[in-house]
Image 1 (tube, rainbow, N blue to C red):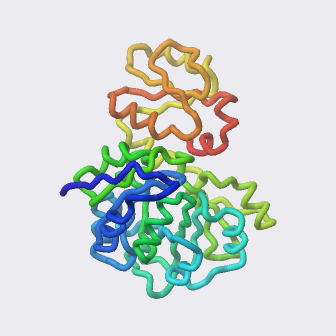
Image 2 (image 1 turned 180 degrees about the horizontal axis):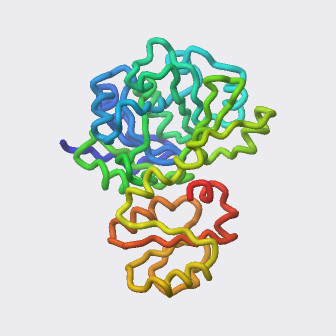
Length: 312
């Protein structure tokens, strides 16, 4: 398969989206940027395309797919109930980096929901993503644009690494604004709002809007990084201080290592400086260049970045 490359797309005029939207209307799979990471998309109305999306991504069909909408009016095609708690969160966060799980519409394909009675709904603030959904004419089934077991893609080149020749098109919108996933919260039972995955939208802000404490699903404490850290070719090791890292290096010399930190490296070696949204680029770099280990200094400088700290 030949993968069409569209862009770079200018968010001010959004010219050049006609061709990828036609691909989506015809049952194609197209990758595009959101404000969090790049996503894959295909029409929620085309079950053959949805099945292919699972195959291309290497994702089990029992794992539900998020649905991306262009506006809140499209919720009527996706969910059966729109609780007051969801309306409050939408007013504060949407469009933006929050994904809300609600009871699914009865006509929504069970392929999308993994046979469950709920669906995860995403309303991106990225103009490219919103216009693509709008031009396609229906919501999109839209997981992240990375092979299962690899870090998320935050720029078009990452998508090419995973999907060149496997998807119909890639829309280049530059580097994703946040470089981290959206926060995932379940309102399937609105009386028990539950965070399923930590992300850009902060827990304390969600609790402020809902005027209550939210529950934290046990998987939220493990899903952030373990889903791909354990599948990288490079071993990832975390340290609280530079001194801890120095002690480890003295005890275990010899391996080829990439050092990640938010501040300047205090240890000699290949260093990649984190800026809050390029963690996935650092991890992909380590894999591409064959580093045996990735050493991350989680010192106070890094701990100020709540989103990055949650991911690590």
